[in-house]
Image (cartoon, rainbow, N blue to C red; front, side, top):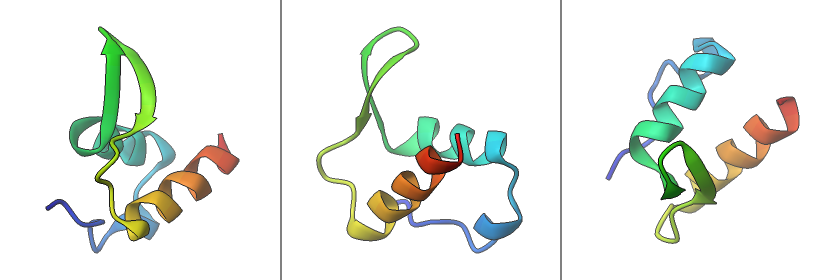
Length: 55
């Protein structure tokens, strides 16, 4: 599975979104997301929650 990159804290907000988009977001239509995929591990869920609070 795709774990958080070691450089996660240094990545920009946009780079983090690109990473989530590439590996863990569930899409309902082209460009529309429904949040994280169901199988996302706890570490990814916590990072997503933190990321969305910063948005």
